[in-house]
Image (cartoon, rainbow, N blue to C red; front, side, top):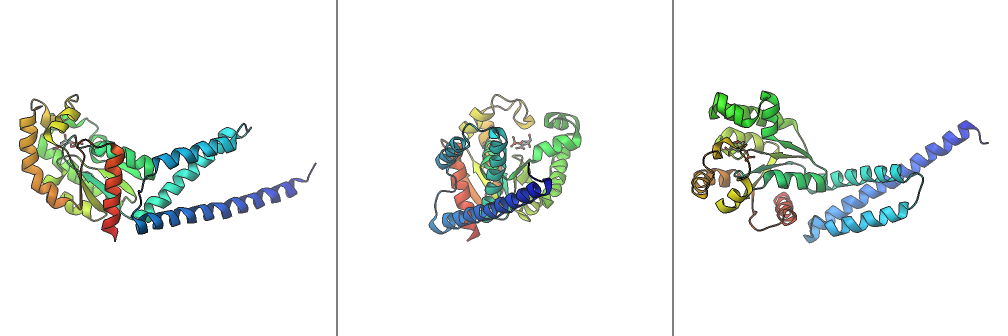
Length: 260
Ligand code: S3P
């Protein structure tokens, strides 16, 4: 049997090798992102991701450390995605747009694909106030809710590499837009009133729409806010009849173009 100190030395050598390879791997990720930017290539590669994962699983094979190896590689993949997103753009993405425009869906997808952090402004308010949005509206009124919203947006200013999903009315106060712009690029998601109605009609969590769940009301409020949305946006993406993957690809491309 070998001496303990000798085995420890081998373990240290292994770590050095792993470190060298990881640095090399992150370097390749950077090279890939430079490629994406230079040749205007698709940012997301869902097919390649699947192929890569399959190859990895088969390389791990029937191994006594199978579970541990898969978990290590998941971490490596996440770290790679973070290197990728940081290289693509070094700012937060603030998603704005009418209720039902797809902000939460897009945010979840981007978080998964780019390993960015994700914050929902409404959720911050719910946590701070310890009550659901509809109860805040019912007990204290809309102005109080808007004050909470402004405070929540200020609170998020220290975040980096984060997707900030804003409530549909966040743009009604200019100060919110100004505060978001300090650390974020603002992406406006749009959808037709008909699409919005389809997406929100099953929920009673949006007090502004309760009792107003129809195309005419949605259209009118959307038109009232349209100019505010447009003025706030650095990038605008239509979401009607598109998959979340298509929307996110368009959005990321537009953000990269902004960076240039
Ligand atoms: C609101 C939109 C809601 C929420 C609140 C008010 C609005 O967020 O902030 O009910 O005024 O448009 P979502 O856009 O995420 O539904």
